[in-house]
View (cartoon, rainbow, N blue to C red):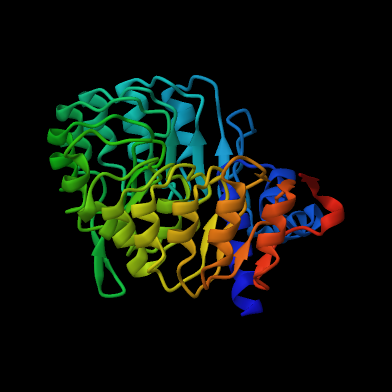
Length: 367
């Protein structure tokens, strides 16, 4: 059990760090020492990124992303992609000519190219679709149907380990319509919309039919079929980490696999909690701070552990009822960030040996 909990905390550190949280904030939410968080980060478990102003790295360097922010011409573009090497990050390049696009598309950068374009005109999409490796447009804000129909032809599908797949296509925060989603289904490789917070109605059901991996970090999933796909793929934990709320139907899909940690979820209904409670794995909540007696009971009416790192105070009108609910159910409960609690609520929590809270000397206890 100790090893399982250790691995869960390692995973939570990874996800929180990738979500932009500081080591101090991660330590606070997990209830562990900041030096412990820093140690895991320094050991290389932290995803590495480089700002757009970073200097160009030569092909084959150890830098995961070579940054470049200035406008580029055809000769510079050709030189940047002339050799195989790490991913080329052109985050600051917001516009390129068709000639520059052709130079990039003919390149050998096997690590892929990142372009800071906010728009992808159809003529550029046609040209860039010829690039045989990963393409990422993290700043893309929209994608027309004509551009989608062109860029979906990006790359060449090959057989790897018995499976056929092509290079990945990242579309940043682009808002896509159902028609665009249908067009993108024909892309022979992983599809990423990592910066999109919510999908337009109907888009989730369409994307769920994509035969390759989907990379999404939505604040809310409105499609059961999409949830089923996301929660069953290798990047399932990132599909969960950014959720702010979850419906009972989506909670049913989560409970079947327990794909990850709820880092940002701050709204949860008792009905959805009851479905999540059916999950056979530990449940980790780091932002859920407002818990009613009904929610507390539904969420902890289970055998595996429930981590409630978002609760800082139990001193309101419902504090005693919430504490009694937590103490009346089987699940071990962790509340490492509790700071303030009423004396009656503290007495109720102490009736259950498997509830973990900070020591009394670190708590503000009110009548």
